[in-house]
Length: 147
Picture 1 (cartoon, one colour):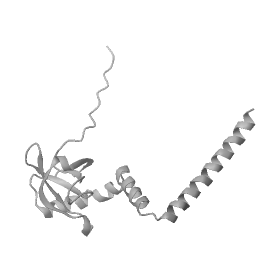
Picture 2: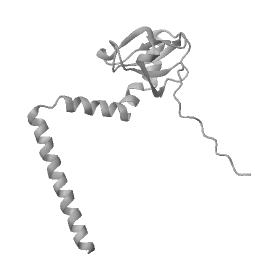
Picture 3: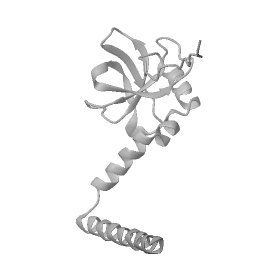
């Protein structure tokens, strides 16, 4: 018989300590941790961010307005109070991990592009044209040398 290669699934489960991102509502774009699972549609979340504008107060949130992230706070007790959550949040370095994720980097890039003025967009266009010219010039040199 052949060897079976068993691999754990890459699913993100709704679990205690799972860090979530709000996709809609008044807290859209902010991070929080699942503190308690209320039922199959709602969870209790708390977001003790170190940044003042990113704090999410403890409340019940529908799972339909949340996105599960791959970040999990380990050993978070059930229905932990805000102080415990904040301590574990800081020790797990949640915000640092989030800032290093590809999704967060892409969001920062989108915000930067959205804030560009017309002249800034023009400068970006010119730089892209210059880069494209250099690539095509070097490609033409390689092609001519191959003949």
